[in-house]
Every structure is written in C-alpha cells, then in structure tokens.
Length: 130
View 1 (tube, one colour):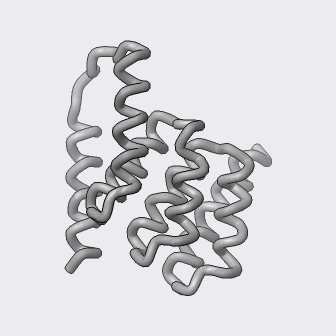
View 2 (tube, one colour; view 1 turned 45 degrees about the horizontal axis):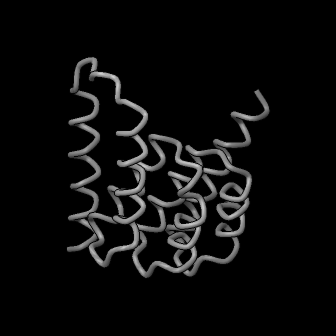
C-alpha cells in the first residue's frame, strides 16, 4: 500500500510539473529555502514526503543533498525511497552519488532496486560517452 501511495505521489507530481506552463523564475533565496526544506523532508518518517523531497532535490540539482540522498540510498527500508534517491543522485551528477548508485547495483538487498540502479548507471554511462 505504501509503495502504491509513493508511486501515485510521483505520478501526480510529474503530471503537475509537466502541465505547468512557464512558471515564474524563482529567486535564489527561494531556491535555497526550498532546498533546505526538501533536505528536511527526506529526513522525516513520512515515506511519501521522502520520495517527493528526493525527487525535487534532483530536479534542482542540489549539491548539498548528495550526502543525505546517499544515506537514504543505503539505509532506507523502502524500495521507493531508495529508487527516488538513486534517481536524484543521477540527476545531480556528483561523482560520489554516481559511485553510490554503482555500488548499489552489487549490494542492495532488493532485486528491483539493483535492477533500477543498473538502468540508471547505464544511462549515466551513455550520457557521458556521448
């Protein structure tokens, strides 16, 4: 049930993001405040909030979030949270995060997470080789 809820949140966020027309540019202070709030969000107990916060940290390419996202990738009990953290680390593109994704291919307990991390890592390799 939690997985379904997390997936529904991601789909809803994606639809809202895609359907938004030319949003007004954010001021630098607004982005920093949002970044701080999203980092706080990934450290809560609410799985849906963790997933959406991780997603948006990837969207804004937050360098400050690399370590907290790596912590989520390695320590979260939820597959959805680990996958969202891996996706965000991929979007940020920091080498520490990319290496964490690579190691997760080998050591994650979930076959689903390992397979998804492998796909993310292959996408990263294709992008860097082109």
